[in-house]
Amino acid sequence: MKPICIVLSPTRSRSMNVFLGLLLLLVSLLLILALATYHPADPSLNTATDQTLPHAVRNWTGLFGAYLGDMLLQALGLTAFLLPLWLGGIGWTWMHSRPSGSPFLRWTGTFLALIFVPTVLGLLPWHWRWLHALPVEGVVGRLTANLLVVYLNI
Image (tube, rainbow, N blue to C red; front, top):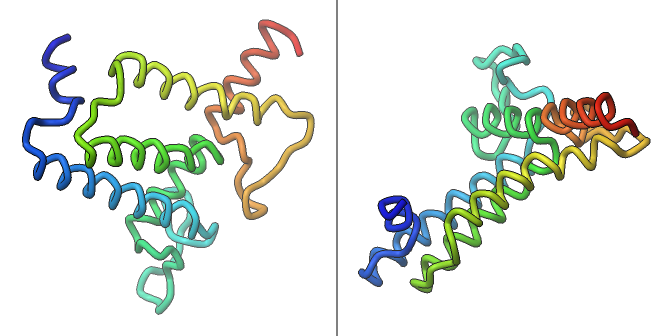
């Protein structure tokens, strides 16, 4: 368990921590742009479009952002918007060279949030859609909500 704790905590070098923190903040910014500028007609794993046409990709982060945004929004629904916030928080603590608590508790909390926040959205009695295309609970929320309804009743 010691190597995992060492990898997930800031280093002793202040300049390295600032660099890694800024890198995580940049990744979180690109991820939030990929999610926020998602368009259902962008090319992805389940949408076929001609990529040679001008303006074939409407996502601000390009083709990679279109694929990433589509996969995250289909899998997690609106809960995918928590991932950039989580990455930004980790980057912020690394920039200030502060450890942010127990890695086991952070990963456990993140995993439980990524499972049960979409489940709560899936258990709501109405069916919202993001941009009139994707269900807000995503596949994870829909499957977990159906599993809970079957085994625990509504």
